[in-house]
Image (cartoon, rainbow over all chains, first blue to last red):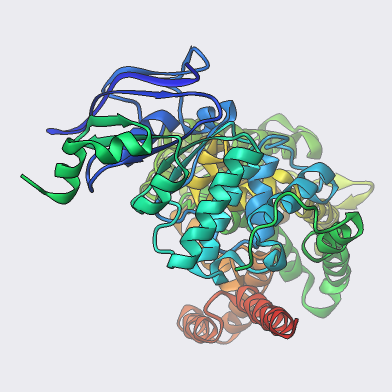
Length: 246
Length: 342
């Protein structure tokens, strides 16, 4: 298995945010995690990405244990996350935002060489700006972008770190209907054209059912159901949780 | 937003080069040469001792700005590095009669080592907690020099009887030779700072300031970033302290006092933190006002304070900071106009 968690749990005081979850991911897959608010979706993400260590359980990537690696270490292995609440570098330009991420794979503590001379990094930055449709606004300050554009920039920054696995935390949050559709299209293209393995936390059911290979349903920190979009939407238990039927 | 185009390559190489020109122009060293030119004639515009003091504090400010302005970390105990540099240089000159270069080196090395030590202990603390811990260390050093080490530091009297230093038959207790000695060092440091700010590491400092969590998610060890930034700024502070000893010919105990740290914070904010020339301008304005007004009244703080209030009202981002904002706003409106036209 490419990426998996083994009975992974995270407790915050008395709250079991994630409770013995087994999560499996194959290379090249686009898998969505859904569930009501507070189901533990973001927490599971953070456990995989190494934002904090799990209370118990293990995480493996390419058969190597990564349970106790921290955020910057998992990022170097190729697992990159985006944030539910936009995390960009607001008073830097759009170009700089992406370049910083692109430079992370080349050099960090060189204090003499000019970034101007890092040609590959700069070319790569432009390539990514093209992919996320921000090349026209490359010299704008990130803080002057619209909400939708910032969400794209967020994805751009993540892409620039050359990830193998992309953890997208509600990328379409706060987007208009039209923007959401374009974003879904973008995600699908990243998956199909760039062969990125993607895990998606998403509230928009049309997006989830439309583009996912597989869906995992979490509820109160536990796995409720797992399967293809069709299997999951037919599942009675899932319907009960989502629609509140008794 | 337009439809995403992935498969077709809509642009060719030439287009790319054009795009890069906008956002990644070759860094221009004009600002460095211009500043050096102004500094070269400074002692003929204002008095040489004042000019020398501005240069020394300017070096301190350059380093402090790397930490506060670019990395976004507030240290309220930078007097520790400045003072330690000053004392180590002074003690070595007085007791060991070492040469000028050895004394300067000792001052710098001591400050850098202290920064490594404080950094190792406090680097994981953030914001105001880091500021408080650095203040505590600073005061610890102050009181250490005040009484337990009185027999070597001479306590409240300050360290006196430091021999006059000669360099190529110029004695450095004269204002002009001293000024040009510091000027050469300052020129080197201006260029170094410029290189740092345009390097991958310099960009990383800014990324840390803007969003530490995101910088981590990009794969950067942000704890190390902050640590190096602290050590780097201590290098500047230690060198400034050591030069201050050469300039004054003695080491006043106040170099270690928290007020020295506070003054540095104020100078940097006044000039504009996070701008290349901000600290230099801040130091210049502060020391000029202090020197001029104290000629007329012993209550110069009252007047200088009032002037600061007005400066900050006029320039909320500091003098250079607000000027840069205005310029950036003008550029931005041009860009927006261009993009609505096309």
